[in-house]
Length: 302
Image 1 (cartoon, one colour):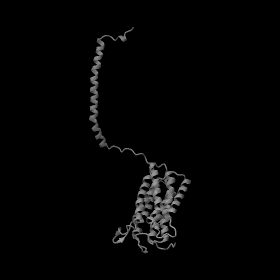
Image 2 (spheres, helix red, strand yellow):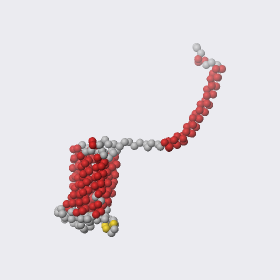
Image 3 (cartoon, one colour):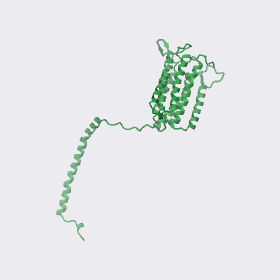
Image 4 (spheres, helix red, strand yellow):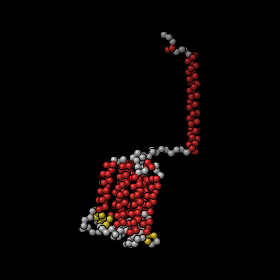
């Protein structure tokens, strides 16, 4: 593989090797840089005791993702493609380890084993290719081999892991769960748009220039990465959301409810008073009859 050899993977570039053949794809990498800046801003606002080297590492990796992707969409060579893909792969592995250990509380040893297993899965996933009538790891005699889903197959294990971890945390009502699940939903949309870049090449056109949908992958991924950085600030297994409570009743509504209930309460009180008054004479009459009649023999001495 020649690192300086040009590659033509996306709609906007077409077959041009020019430096600015992908202006929209290149500019949209600003989303990654903004995500890194936003994550750093949130981190420095936290007390020093809540910051760790892991947080700075994740922010630094997001910054490298943006810079590597920018280089690739400017130069589009085999070498810059590695600069684009490697930071993404490292971020996925580091964040998985962070989530398992810091969110769920998996011991360090088991976390390392799970990350190694995930790395092996990614390595196998990278070898899977598609061709006419087939999918798998091709042999030398297979013709027409190309990346599956326009190269998006590489990101599906990360999407699956993000969904699983998010659901596990949601079951525990962990404060990081909503951020992870929203990031997973956004990533699912962005992977779809990345996959459709070439298929929609003739349909997404700006001023006669074919743009495709790869730029949307950058923008949405920038948002997803920011959510993941925000979630990392809740990196404790005991960061549980408070139970939901009924919303307080507004004073005006409470007064109206009391006013509606007042006549009913007064009517019930009047009914009780009337019932007591009806019973009172009967008890008095019984007492008078007891005085004028024969004494109760059961009370006389034997």
